[in-house]
Image (cartoon, rainbow, N blue to C red; front, side):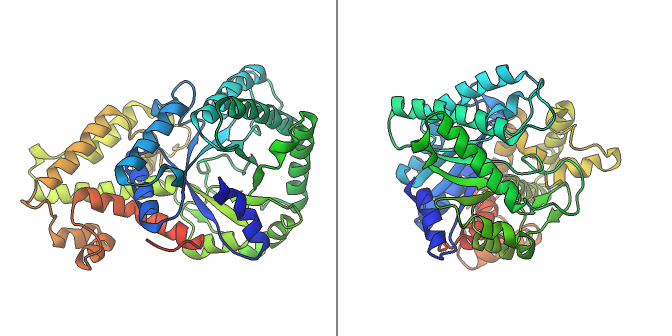
Length: 430
């Protein structure tokens, strides 16, 4: 955790440095992130959300110990030292159980936090901002902070019991809800500096009331809204001038930096400006799985060109069939019937990411990659089709920087996004 603990000090010394936080459980995304870290020599921060991974399995089917083992096994396979892998938990709190009473949701949150810390996760985002079934629609700062401090106490007990490095904490939340806005949007209200300061003070007091002064020294970051978001087809870009007061407001708080959520699809220039504005932790989730989906679609179009229909994976059709048959992950988001097929495949919210672990999709993806590997004696794909459907990868293949294989081409789509983030964070390219 030293890399995270040092970020605030480095910002105080005038260094515009940061770290991307990859919030995904997809095997290809994780492989790409770990390989990228191995080749660049820097640490990699990987986070699981309370919806992805929890004591009931989440939508990935993994509990925290399962996810820890899953990531570390991948690190071993690609040759990345485990010490270079930082694991975090995002939006840990009652997020997954908002339809239950506060007492029930918080009891489950206690177990959630205990399992994350016991499993070895050491960056813990305490987020109790969401209202439960018997709460008022908007919770007061004092109540949010009191619930977060309760979970911090659980985390501290779990750490002392299990040993290892002490956890570091992130508090606060962004607006709107995590994972992309449900409705179309034009602009967002940047968090007011006085609201940020009130959030910090409320949490400081709540920690002190529980005797968590030592844990408070390890609160390294605060989630606020810098004015970035995306919806189905549009992106609200970061405008540094609108966040200038917020950026300055963190400077009187020693040891604190900002964590920016929903930075997906921002330009390189916007990401670099966020880092300069003390948004030193840049969260990305749908952005990397969208890049994965783009590459998979391109590979499936290549498959259509080189294989007879009976032998194809039909990946795109299988994805749509499964999403229509099991709409629970998108039906609250995609409400325009006329563009439903477009949204299911191409929305920047990327609700497809909830389906990649489905057995039918996994089988279709495996078939696609096998088909492409078998398409030529060397496994290489036709350059003309790479130029047509994967022009960026085509250039890297032609320059000798990328192997012409389906798996390498797929990972390269994700790595391109990771490159953009690490370079904005002041890290050298691989």
